[in-house]
Structure formats: C-alpha cells, structure tokens
Length: 467
View 1: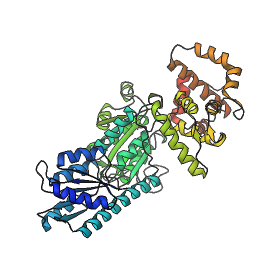
View 2 (view 1 turned 90 degrees about the vertical axis):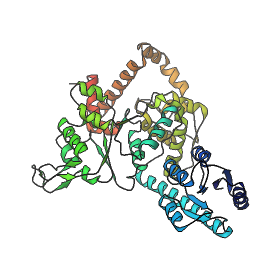
View 3 (view 1 turned 30 degrees about the vertical axis):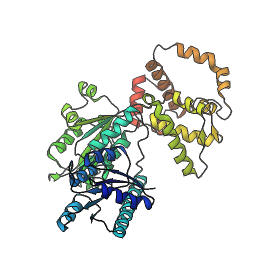
View 4 (view 1 turned 180 degrees about the vertical axis):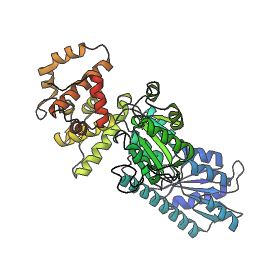
C-alpha cells in the first residue's frame, strides 16, 4: 500500500483529499504546515507528497526544494488555489512531478497520483537494476559507526568534496566509494577505479595519465589514461598509499590545475574529475617515513570516512550474514539456508582478519558444506579450512577433545590480542606460501589480498623460504 503525505494549511482541503485517497486504499497522513511536513519526510518513507504552495509558516516551493535535497527521488504534486501557467512551470523546474489547481478535479487527481507513484516505482526499479549491473551492494548494518558512514555519504555525495576512505582490507572501502558516486550529481557519468597497489610503479603514470605513441619502448599506440576516461565522472584511487612519489606529484598537479599531460606528450588536457581515494595505511606515518606527500594528503583528505573493522561492529554480523545467505543461495539456485542462534553467536566470536570479504567467503563455504540449518559445530569446523582438519567430520566436541589443551597453552603464550593476531597471521601466511611452493602470485590470489600486500607481510614477519 502506497503511503502519501498531504501538506496543506486548509483543514477542509486536507480532509477532502484524505477521504478521497483513503477510499482508493492509500495510506494517508496529513499536516498543516511545511516545517512539520519536512520533519515527517525526514523521519518516514513516503511514496508521494501532495503539497500546497501558499502556506503561512513555510512556502510550498521551499518545502519542495528542501525535501528533494533530503530525498531526491520523492514525487511531489503541488496544489494551489491561485494556479497560473508560470507557477506550474516554476514548480516543474524545481522538481515537482505535476501541478493541480484547487478545488481538485477528482479524476485528474487520481490519475496524477497514480502516474506519480508509477514514475516513483520506475525510478526505484531502475536504480536497483543499475546497482545490480554495477555490483553496488547495500551498506549493511545499523551500528553507530555504519549509521554515521551512511549519514556522511548522504551529506557529502552531492558535493564536489574529495574524500579519503580509510580502513583495513576487506572492510568495504570500495563500497563506500561506489555509494559516494551513486548518490552524487555525477552518477550518470563513469566511475573509474584504479588499484594503485596492483600496478607496477613504472606503469602507474601511464595508467593514470595515458601515453603517446613511441613515448617508451612498448608504447606502440596512444593510450587514454584513467583521468581522461573519468572526465565528467568520478575517479577512485584505491590503495593510494602504494602510489610512487613521482605519480603522486602528477596527481597533485591534476587536482590543483584540473589539467593533465600524457606521458611523452606536450599538450595539456583539461579534465573535470572528482577524486575519491582509499587506503589501508596510516598516511601520516607514511608522510613521516617519506613515502607520501603531505600536500597531496591534505588535497585528498577534505572529508575522511573511516570504515571500521568487522570485529568493531559485531552486532552487524547477523544482518550481513543473512544477506550473504540469501544472495549466494539465489545465485546457486538453491533454497535459502538458515543459521541457528548458536551458529550466529559463533560467527560473531571469530576474529575476522579478512573483514567482510572473509565473512562472505565463510558464508559461501558454510552453504556448500553444511546441512539445511547451519550450526555452531559447522562454524567451528569450517572456520579454518586450511588448518589440516578433516572439515567434513569435525565437530566442536572433537576439536576440543583433540586439541583443547594445546589451544589453551597457545593462548596463554600471548599477553594481548594484537600479539596473537600477528602470530596467527604469520603462521597462516607461512603455511599458504609453503603449500604453494612459495609462489607469491598464486598465494596472493588464494588468500584474496594484493600481491604487494603479501610482499609487505613477508617482510614484516621476516618470512624466508627454507633452503
């Protein structure tokens, strides 16, 4: 049932409209002024607003403008007893779906309401389909940190402000960037993504700015760079902390002057690009170490959005896990499985070193290997498939009986959680490298991290191949 809101300072008009629309099985609310009407629009999800133009506390045109800032796709039908062609045109320019005069003609009113609701549904369906095509998922969760991120996106997305997104690998930084683009005025233009860690330092400048034919040995033809491809849209620089200093200098110039030059080219090319950046590194520390430019940091960090680790928002795990269950089971064409309460509690207790990405992989594994209802035993058995356990037969009782005492002694060897995490991460990476005969590329693909990150971990933990 569609939910409608009538904003009009004449009680007789509100009552008449409400009676007509409720007779047509619409859910209707009404209010006598624009200020309270705006508050209701912020608080509730209405499908359509019918708003008077001439009101005492706030003009209807002002209500229209402010409401569409809050909810850009909300259909408005403006109503007035002093209607003119000029008024109707002005309302249309400000975003109203249609304009009707008082007293409203019954048939025209109902047809206009029906058409406005149909248009609203089409807009919503189109956005959903575009999101599916672009793989832009919902930001799931209602924790304080996630609610703050959603609120910040709503405020920042319609502006041209640059945004620096920080957070651990797999936490959802790319998803935040996609929503910033999706809700921006550039949504109909391209979102171009560049993973700075995945491109060798000697090629990053060509990737970003393009190159002219013959500018270096393998430049057999002209190449258009990512800045040009993103012209009019958004450029997302993922893992910006891994960019070389020379490329950083050119990015800084592009941000300052809105101009680029292709490698080997002399012509300056104007670009209109909004830049979003993301990193899992502490850029202030990178600046101290001489690996990142302070001036570029301040150019990028107009707005900072930090995406928390999954272990910092465990209350969101049930809704994320349920979403993954439904989407993965639908993709596989199978009935949606369930996780019982004990199984969900076991999921919430895991360390999630790989964040939301690891949770997705875990849910997929549980769907494939578990029965109709996923239990605590399933979660415990399948949480570490690389650990050498017979995951097809293991249960929590068996695990406790076989290794409970050794686990206790292992845990007692560490004084804090970070030391234990480092130990577990080191042993996991060492195991995977040895399993793959120290093939770094294959190991990085298998554990779903960037190759450059794996090299950093090898160096951090002092791992060396056995002679």
